[in-house]
Structures are given as structure tokens and as C-alpha cells.
Length: 112
Image (cartoon, rainbow, N blue to C red; front, side, top):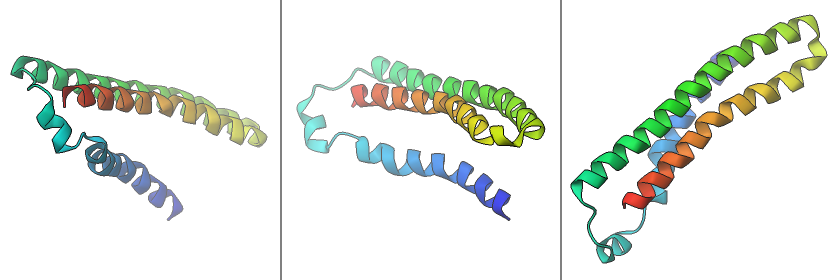
């Protein structure tokens, strides 16, 4: 039961962040009206850059978590007292996806 709850949270939290937090970080309408319009080509490439930043960072984080998680669980199986250190390494690998999301938000902020 606990494992299922953790997996559900791991899937739902990133979706909630992109649905709730990203619109809150968007510039207000008054600030958008004062700035000159962004050309369509620049807007298109900006969206592509943001998607690539978030997508490639997520793929890199998934690969890193897979490798580090497998090694960490092997180490914990041999020495249970290394569990805390193993979780830290897995968390550091997951940070790659957060950096990609931050870069994507910064790119989208420059477009608006």
C-alpha cells in the first residue's frame, strides 16, 4: 500500500507542478500588453527549446536514477546502514530533471 502511494505521488506531483505553478509564474496580462509582440518564428523556436530542455533533462534524470538506484539498492542489500546515503545519491540524480524544468520555465518566461 505504501509503495503504491509513493508511486502515485511520484507521478502526480510533476503534473500538478506544471499545471498549477507554471501558470502562476506567467507574467500578468498588463505586462504582456506593454511589451512588443514576439515574432512567430521566435515563439516557435522558444517552445521547441523549452520542450527539449525539459524532455532531455527528464530522460537524463531517468537514466541516472535507474543506474544510481540499482547500485544503491545493491549497496543497501549488503550493508543496510548505507540506506540514507543511497537515498541522497538518488535524490541528486533526480535533481537533473528539476534543473531542466527550471530552464524551460526561464525560456518560456522570456517569450511572454
